[in-house]
Length: 140
Image (cartoon, rainbow, N blue to C red):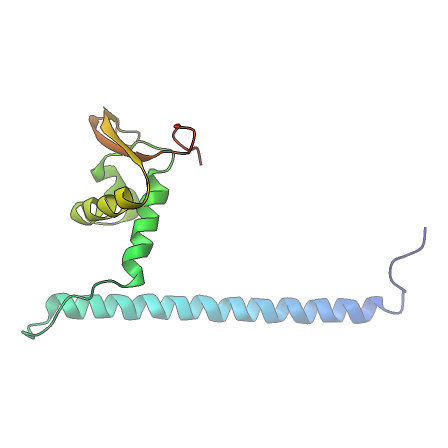
């Protein structure tokens, strides 16, 4: 069996691999730092909006944060029958926000809505679940 690489190429390839690995680690650390800073800035903006006394201050609507929350709620109810309180607890959203997102989800897909036992709290209450094409709750 013939070796795939010559022995003289091995040290150069190992040095290149180490360099690429170091670059990816540094890039990953930078990305984590940028994401953390972004979260801090978003929270600071939310705090300022909720505590400001400026009379012309308006709520920000239509941003990607809302659509991300809709995706989060959709992912949470895929494969599980959950009540609004359990969805709120799992996603970190407030129950009124969950209701709004459930309405948006109902415009895009066909959720199952009914009174049954919640998979989260085990109470018999109104639950929500996203249904797959075959009519079964999708399993994640």
